[in-house]
Image (cartoon, rainbow, N blue to C red; front, side, top):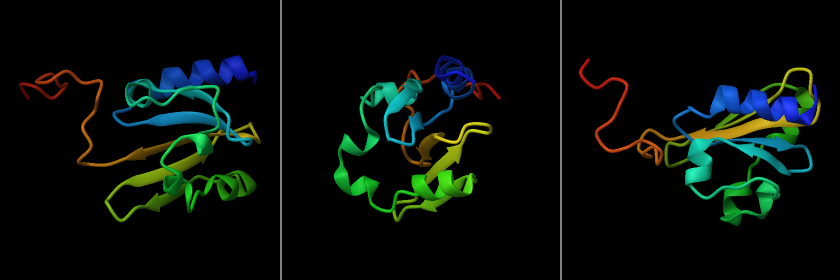
Length: 118
């Protein structure tokens, strides 16, 4: 699979995920960000480890996830679930993201929800 195909697949699967997600190479270069990550100021073409805050990168499980080719999950003290998920068939690329129950979705307009009126 080409890098362009991986990026297109990432956007198709992750753009509407309600929290940040990024497609990252083993060398930590960010290939793609979903809508929430973009709304939070995360960008492509940079190394994820160069984006602040520095302390957020302590305990990163990307190398372990890539080495074992198995997704990893970490639970932060504040309730955030952090994940690293290697792509099947790709040795050097993974999806990295987080989800926190109290973090609002910056892409959702106030008062709009798919569960509205249910």
